[in-house]
Amino acid sequence: MTDAAVKHESDIDVDTIGRIPRPLSLFIIALAIAASLIAVFWISQQLSITGELRRSADRMSLYRSTLVSALEEHQHLPFILSWDPLVIDAALGADPSQLNARLDSFADEASIDAIYLMDRSGLTIAASNWDEPRTFVGNNYGFRPYFKQALSGQRGTFFAIGATTQEPGFFIAEPIHGPSGNIIGVIALKVDLTSLTRAWREGGETLLAVDQRGIVILASNPDWTYKTLLPLTAQARAEIEAERQFGSEPLTPLDFSGENEFRARVDGLRYIQTVRDVGHLGWKLHYLAPLNRVNAQAWLWVVVAAALLLMVSVGMLLARSRRIRSALFASQAERRGLQVINRKLADEIEERKAAERRLEKAQKELQQVSKLAALGQLSASVTHELGQPIAAMRNYLAAADLPGNTINGDARELVTHLNGITARMEHITRQLRFFAHREAENLVTFDLRDAVQSAITMMRADLDVRSIDLSVTTPQHPVQVHGDAFRIEQVLVNLIRNATDAVAQVSQPRISIDLGQDGDEAYIRVLDNGDGLSADAQTMAAEPFFSTKPSGSGMGLGLAISAAILKDHDGKIGFSNNADRGACFVMTLPLASLSQ
Ligand code: ADP
Image (cartoon, rainbow, N blue to C red; front, side, top):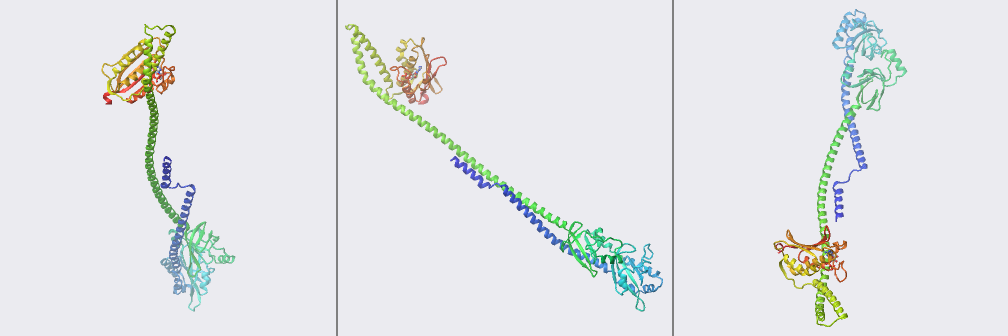
């Protein structure tokens, strides 16, 4: 039952608390978390890239249109100016001073870097910056492609670093036709585009404009300007040289790789790129969005997801620990219940054992009682049967021993011998009478002082013969008990006889009888100064047939029967040796007032 209880208890633990995660499960959970975080990163990165591309497209349209409008804003101005009489006159050789002033005011008005007039050889004859130290006047730009294009009758456009100012700009040129329709010169203007790149930079954007040869002509990062995205052919390099397009710039390659249509790496940094053509010039505008911005967003989502996961995990852990706690409480309560049941069970087992012990004792006692009862019956019949012949024998012997009888010698000796045998037989029958069980008990309330006196009276002769010093202590008041007075006297007589036997060899034999009461019990102590109880007798004196006396003197039944009589009266007998010498026997009985 206890085992079953324990098993049941352990079952509760397993069922209600659940399995404890093992390292493998923890590893799988960690793997799943890592995989989901990677998935979150990837998905959010893809979403960010898509968003960034959309944003890039919007930004690209804006920057492309500003660039195009910057390039085209003034494209018609040279054409208009080519029809200006002042321009034509100056081209024909008139004094350019008035034109200089007009070009100056036009340039100011339109925020144009420079407007200038060249003759057919490319020599500048009038310019808006005529009065500035680095004026174009007097310089020959016949080598510039825009001049050549204009001279051939077309509009010329060109991006270049200024040969005079060393500042980049976009050149637009138109031919000037003379009165006869022939080309008499070229009017050109230079638009400064650096404000554009400044705006890009200040807007925190990354852009670069690349010409048809792959040379960066405008860039938000000044370090990238005049670097090449594609390797330059020797011919292209020679042309650039001849046109002096980029002055003394070495045109080194930019650390650029267009990984695919949408990805690029510049100076080791990765970008999402959007590329668009710019007008008819063959230029391309690259809008670059740093990938780390996208990654930062993706990481942000990872952190958010991780935080959510953490919160969910903490929530689950809390729920789990709550579940475990309640399961523990339940199991503890159940364990307590089981403990109570176990305790009760143990008590019951103990009680049962005690009952078994009592039963065993009762059975032994029953055996003893039945033995004693049988012995009592036997004793009664033997006493009865032998009583008459022994009495007759005694009478015959007494008659033979009368003084008038003439028996002498051997016959007298025989009579004396037979007298001794008869006395011994009487002694034995007297003992047997003590064992005889009385059929009908006469239960009365009597004073133990009387019982003590009558027992002493019965034993008086023996005590006197052996010169035993007897001291009796009894209280002044009666000590009433209820029971069979005769049998209680029998017990007392037996104790006194045993004491008498015990002091037989003592030089100053002494017996004391002490009657008293203690609480609701009466007691009678019989002490002697004999040799005391032997080691065996200390434990077995009250066992039937235990005797240390010689055969014929003792049958070993006196104390057993005394104990049985006292038990019948709800009393008991105890014995031990005295501290100095001799034995002490104590019989106790319940006082009548309480037992009735
Ligand atoms: P019996 O007297 O026939 O031997 P009992 O039952 O009366 O039988 O006594 C049993 C034994 O107890 C005795 O043989 C003796 O050894 C011991 N005994 C009893 N009374 C005394 C005593 N007063 N002093 C010493 N031993 C005693």
